[in-house]
Length: 409
Image 1 (tube, helix red, strand yellow):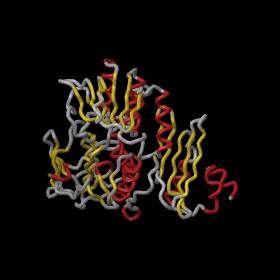
Image 2 (cartoon, rainbow, N blue to C red):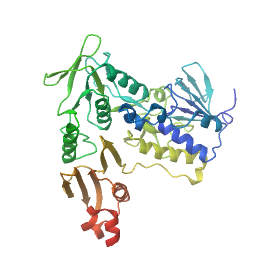
Image 3 (cartoon, rainbow, N blue to C red):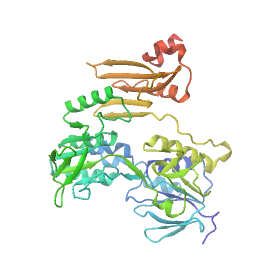
Image 4 (tube, one colour):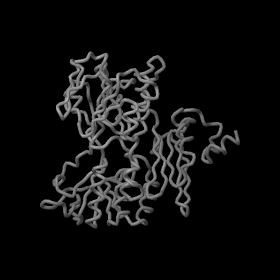
């Protein structure tokens, strides 16, 4: 067995965040004797963000790949697809895979992602009940849409709405169930959520807010869904999109400190100094992460620490902006979406153009922004929220956006 100093960097998982880490390591001229990646999926890293476009038949599957095979060979990155790590020995500095392979490592990165959260109701194991998390899920949904006509999507968050719109585009009659009073309740306020509901209904989606499932019905295959109020909806397909749970079992078995996710510090280091974690599987302070952008930030931080530690900064979760497009409707959200006792609201609503905007201000600082229809100034507002700078000098013109404020400054 080689000494740990001679062993490669090993990465468990090959999603978008792991791939971003690999690319940054290559760009910085990493010091490792190669990079070895063990991937649970049968496909190398692909663009999960575009799975909805693939589902809606707006993008071919071939365009999802992030890098061709030749790129990995050229940069001495060895990827073992469909071969997840099943055990870690931090004492030996090795991992063991599902194929029985024992691989030494000099440093180990856990990028094991997350899995769909369970509803905890009867019938979740029936045929025709699916999630919408990966390429295999998307392929299965496309096949089902070609054979059946009715679908129910449980969850009116971003992922659920993407699934619903994709299935609608494939010709299915789709009902969305959302337990909150309005859609995208983590990113939008009630006014924007209700506006979005109306626009999606115009496009053909049946949206039921304030509704939760009680049971999924059927003998072998799902045939209906029973709601909490005992309403029964017939369906051929159920897609569950109600949240995620970080994959921490591998880390727990290895004795690493875990809470909701794998606990890391600002260097993305776990409780063992040679093991790191990033993306949806990790937890920094009280924060876990369900969006790709903080994962990309973590990848940049970790690459710097592994390659140029004297120049590296530490990860700090700031105000993460959410920029979405659902059924062609642009949406932007950053910071707070609900007012407090000391919050000043600036709102505008252009109903004919389906445009809505809201800014939340406290003590001379912008603390939240929600936009629908026109999101052109979104990143500027996000920078103001993240920096916490005083906006008093252009408070009266801030709703008009960056160009107007700079011109009048």
